[in-house]
Length: 148
View 1: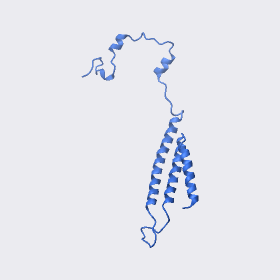
View 2: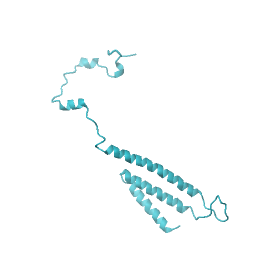
View 3: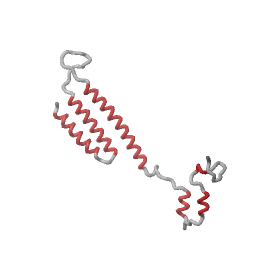
């Protein structure tokens, strides 16, 4: 096992975990990519020595196809999670933009805000008793009788 590849794998794990602990989604995605690639390198290093292809059936030692399948599966999973993280990053960026994502002022709210005083004498207790609490309490003809 080459010692240089082991050192590269360890550095990738350390940098990836460091980036995963950050609160920025972009750094989390970069950390996830580094950890995924370090895991692929770990599986590659643990696969052992190279040999002939198992399909060819040559004489001598054959290479194990299982680590190659694991690496391929890990690449696909890393790609899928990275695409999901990219969608989260894009959506959070779109929502954080103040110029495009703002709440419109309502005309009634502006009228209340510009009023000098607010009075409660306009609505009486009788008006409140006659008013239905929910829309479904109002019949089609507009009277306050409940529908059955």
